[in-house]
Image (tube, rainbow, N blue to C red):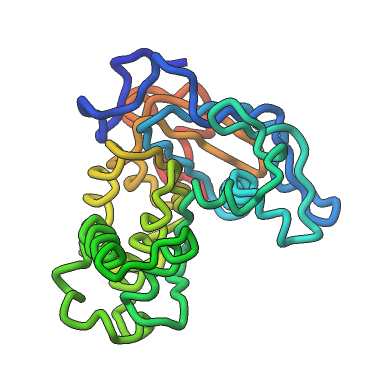
Amino acid sequence: MVGAAAGGAAADVSGPRYDEPPVIEVRDLSIAYGGRPALRGVNLDVHRHEIFGIIGPANSGKTSFLRALNRMETFNASMEVRGSVSINGMNIRDWRNEYALRSRIGVVFPLPVGLPLTVYENVAFSPRLRGIRKKAELDEVVERCLTRAALWDEVKDRLDSLGSLLSGGQQQRLTIARALSQEPELLLLDEFSIAVDPVTTMRIEDVLRELRSELTIVMATNLVQQARRLADRTAFFLMGELVEIGVTEDLFEREAKDERTTGYIEGRFG
């Protein structure tokens, strides 16, 4: 679909491995809620160290797609999923241990979802579940993850304060730090900047550019310029349909293959 030289604004030497098998393979993915279709017949691949952007108006299927990647239908009896999603060649529905699957996938939701714990314990929670008990080791993990989320310098003197007392932007970065504490292979972001001010949004975007050298990122956003700034490739979803996938630079700088993509990018609808 794309060559090794492909890449949007985020491309660099640590960029996507298009010459390797994809990390995520989605085939004929369809999703419905109580029989009402939300996504139909999606086929796409996501490559290692890629920032893969998903754009589209509300109710286009972006969030449903992310939920399917993490088997969230387990928690929603009305959500029906058909087709297959494979991570590193293994169908995620063949995993008997769902915790083992989710431990490899970090998720950041539109609004900060902090645990009712201190800043320190928010980040230490997942490492403790993995069996890390020594305080020195936990201290190292907490500092590393908060630093990677561009938050350490702001909270290092109040690690024992409740995470809920941080500002909205800080809470969202704390959510990212907590996701990173799982040591995930994939990071899924669903409208991460919807409740964050522009300055914090840019700081988080800088964090994501750095993280792409360590993991693979799938990012759903209704901010088309955010996809343009960050994504190596971008998919356009509309009314439950995958309309088009392309190298981000091609979609924005050149003529998109589908006029609906061009219309959405140019703000003529959505």
